[in-house]
Image (cartoon, rainbow, N blue to C red; front, side):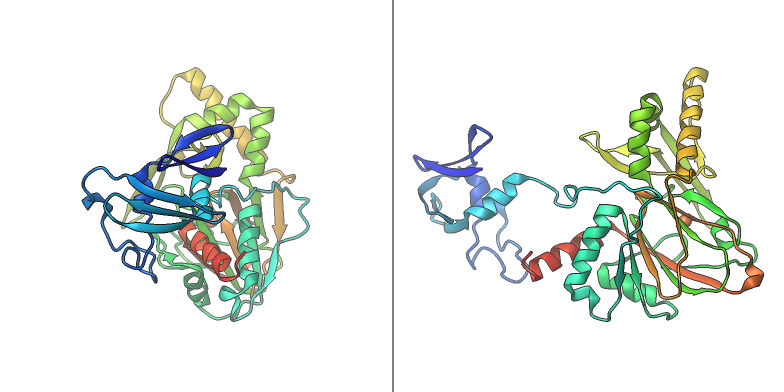
Length: 366
Ligand SMILES: [Fe+2]
């Protein structure tokens, strides 16, 4: 990518093609102190109020800078790198390459908590690991009731749901969800019926005195890539049919329709939803439903297979942060008479982790 000047026009060359950069695009980016607030980086002018045809009356190019004078008298000095960065047009979080994993993964992505961690390089490393693997475990997090709220709000902002600002995971009488029993929980994603689905779950272990109650994780990315290769018809129908997910309790009825495997605009993995107690496929031709049910059975078999399931025990002070769009989670059963098992959970969204990661990248000049 290269910037060139010709006849007061600015061009960018990329992959053999040369195109003019719209003068207004450059005019919008003028950056003197009269035009941009230093602290917030917000414009001090409204570009929609600039009337008339903006043209460049003078421009010069050096190794690092592009100096421009516009026909409305405004002058600016732009860095070449900032222009190139914008033209790369990449969401940097989408290009952190996902690492597929299965039950053979040995390293559980552990990072020791320290009170300053939210402003340390260690948090940057932990977040990169999170984007690569879909989960990370912080160790030695203070075992205090509700500390999870501080933790979540120190990365970004907590995402409240119908289970409250945070939720307590322990067996309780008359539960409104199987999570609040001592029954095993097969791998699932949380809140598939919400719009939008909460992006990231945090789960903080306060007490774990029982011998069972292992936490389980499955990489939905690994499993769906496997399905795509081995059973392309199953993969296709699960990426096409929108299913209704629903949650009903006394106070609310929540519903959302989505594919079980959602792809992005480039047909790449975006999100999985899996919770076979809450999904309702629409009525379709019998043949199509035959294929759909076979596909759902197959993906369920893969999600539940030992080959893909990571099983580990959370100890008091462990805080598991997992991507609810990529990973499935669950737990093995336990005997509530053996002792206490008490976890606290909450959600945050991707803007929290992305915002923190960008901040730390800026801070440590990475
Ligand atoms: Fe869950």
